[in-house]
Image (cartoon, rainbow over all chains, first blue to last red; front, side):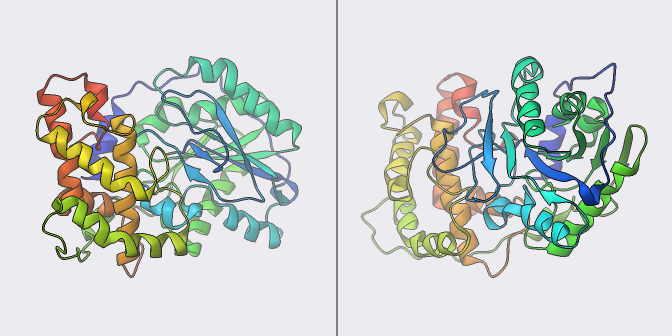
Length: 148
Length: 226
């Protein structure tokens, strides 16, 4: 198993393109509320596991970091996350940045989607905008997106 | 991730997207993209390395200063890290009446429990089966490898999902046997190449493939390059 071999397989998957690139100017980072959105299929133990081709998201409570991965793909290393969740969702690091005043605060809510998606139309039309609205309503300014 | 970045920006959220596969992040071109040449599954690079993770975040958040779409590359690559390998002692046979994989699972249980106590159960077992059910699941895969049709072998769930729990059991046991956090993929390679349990999963997968079962049923029981 070599990481480059798996990446080579993934490179063949057609990636969506966007004709128009929306660009939101953030507030000063030292005043911004920062959330993490990951495609690692994370969920809390008491939440519904991800189904194959699950286009939905799970809401992750910042105060309860018992996250587990429900990813269906075997094509990534999960030991890094097993040993240190910050490898995927770096909330301890964000806490430290907030304590240093480099970011305003860590959001109370984060999101996880499932990364092994081949048809993204439902995400683009439905769960993506719904997740964005949820974070906006929570007062989030900046989102860090981490892939798995 | 890059697709979500476009959607979130449209909704008025400023985003920074980390990317592990250069071609993908370049193609989808999120408003602010940072390609990190790290192993898949480790978007912040190094587990347990606070300073490294902060360097990634510092670069990522610096992109928020851009006044137009921006794409940059993180300056440190971890692409060759997998060459380190993982060497874990495997338990000796203790019960010759058991299949070697089942005997092995029992022998690894203390290491598994030790790792769960230290790190929690984030990617180990529980998708379909618990640690207590790994033996039975492996026994079912042994039957498949010996020729029993998979639907008649007693696999306690979708084969790929059960295989993930078995892999998770071993990888976390390997974590418990190691004095450091293993390099990316080395836990997987150790499981698939060095353990009896890995051999059983790969043998069952091959048997299903050779029996003409539908590809999605067996293919995802192991990484795609296997």
